[in-house]
Length: 224
Image 1 (tube, rainbow, N blue to C red):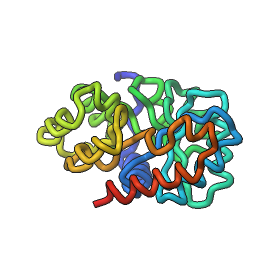
Image 2 (spheres, helix red, strand yellow):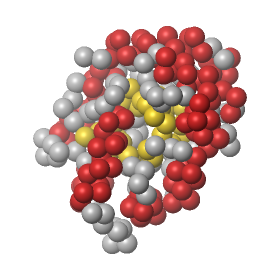
Image 3 (cartoon, helix red, strand yellow):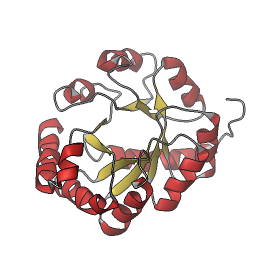
């Protein structure tokens, strides 16, 4: 990581606070693949009405950036993030679309340099203790743990909490309503990321009422 520029401590702290405000607002962050821009606004509205205002749209479809812009423009109170950011180019495109936070599945110098140059906070992906320590050295204290279940699950994060107590995580990947409590009870987990609150088949059908009910169920079940 020799090519990574170091941000000032105050600027990094400000971005961390912005990220924490978004992530601690609810127990689960919906992670969504939006295939059609027409689905964006009603999908976001259903989730917000169900109590989930912080949303992540993954950049896995041609519609993703337009969906982020539509949600940001149309849904008052929503905090829209962009996921599956793989490069500085992705970072810039997501920021231009109006994303209020950025999520990457892993880390590289290109992404971290882009984060240094941007006022939009990054939730960087990690899967190992070495990656966590490298990001911690760069000033990051909030990270995504991905793919959570495949990378060791809740037991792995619990093991990290003792030697690295000052880093918090949003585990994503294989998380469901059934196993989310295993993560949320850990001292170093602030929320989880999950796709179960907005299943693809329900989005395609336009079952917005059903998605709203899933959001309500997640809030009611997972909030302490």
